Length: 285
Image 1 (cartoon, one colour):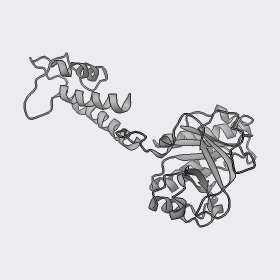
Image 2 (cartoon, helix red, strand yellow):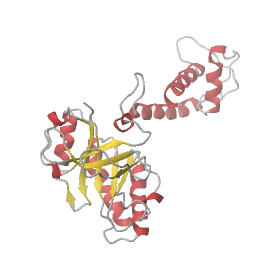
Image 3 (spheres, rainbow, N blue to C red):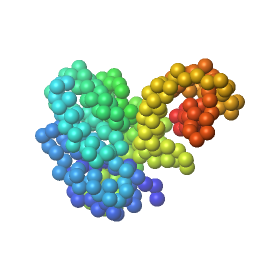
Image 4 (cartoon, rainbow, N blue to C red):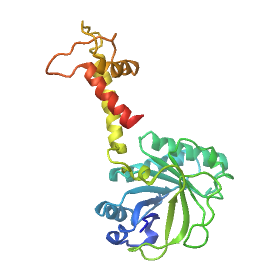
């Protein structure tokens, strides 16, 4: 059975997540409609996903009319959801609420910038009819674009006219454990499902959290190793370490002129450089 990507709100009622988990590969959960209407089921749905190992992200249906209101909603959205550690945060922009095009664009951009400054993965959802007329195509900095285009049936019809990463192809889907219709989505770009769920497609790959942890370790090592940069020695770097040693110097991880001691019992800078280079080649390049 091909698993499904769904997006849900309190309109789906009480979901039996034990049953739904058999069909769902990714759930995108609404937390709120602006800041005036908090989704009545978001907490319950998040806990259901967590308990049944369903990967999930969150979204907000925004109602701002200017940048100030956008930032208020962005802060509330992040604070409401961040404690649950969602995989990503989606800004759903599909109505003007009386705002002009300039305010919609600037408000959306401010919203996305606020979330990106939190170092989280950010998606932008917007209507197929809304994307060009309201210049949402000029918004930058998000990590993925999600666009709906329905065929009026339960099966996919014509794809969106615009390149996007997720395609919401129907609002008439069925999932066990969910009463009534539910929105269904398909991967539509180059990003695989594993990119959204932070799962490995190949054994040995790093998850996003592991990758971020590695980058933090490298940053810390830069600072620590720089304190030893003036240490000189009279022993040349061995041939097996030379390439990594030169790379580490170029990257600013260490400084030196190509010589180093190799005392017993501790890791030398050249050995650390070799370790970092191996990680870099395997996980970052």
